[in-house]
Image (cartoon, rainbow, N blue to C red):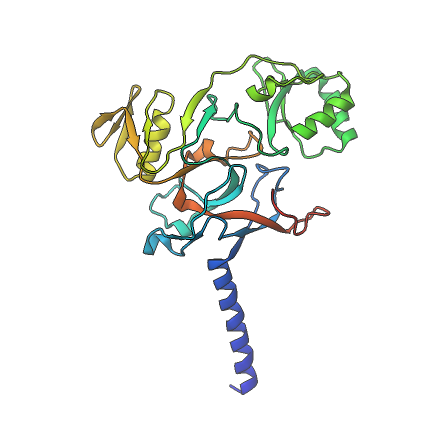
Length: 315
């Protein structure tokens, strides 16, 4: 092999090594797999993720154990990339699990008021892009379609139906504002979110508030009280991430064969939520997210087909 080829191969090897080191210690990337984070992030967009935002998680935690350099707190409202906390195969190595990207709405030690669908119905909306569900009469569907077309809202399909046959769609606050102003009272939207139901809007009808329960996001070393509404969630967390045997019998949590009224967790956890309540790729699906699953904060959009979004900062 002549000197020229050797130089080329060395250059290629150097580039490959540089990419591996950057992805392992500085920045990684992911593609948005679904519509759950619209309108903050759209399906198919490529996002750069800063691995140092919350401290660098050292590579290969399944082999060398979980360690983080320069640990920093996650802020409420951050859009976070993390490994699947509840894979189909629990023994699968952390670094080989799939990834999710969602917004952190609950940090270790926080108390969230959740409804029976585990939606944070009482907390403030962390982004104007967050969506909520609204009901309207099915007979007004043609009018709604015309309004959506007039205000330029596309890719907003029906997400469900009520027992009475009414239609359900999801809107962000800004989208609802556009639709309501354009419709001028032709369609009455009824919110399912208790927070929005208490707000006054000229074309939004109020509704009865659902029952809410307090859920404490586990913090390392702090006991969490067990109640009938959180027993199953705590049980699943203990079994999946604390390495203990646990079951729920009636409303009682049993850990290692003993009934407990509280449990002290060994690590910090977080509660993640999608912008769109229809999308279940968040803590409603897999529960609390342990600290070792956190990869980093979504930073900038590096691939998109939408005008003006290239290298836009993720908010």
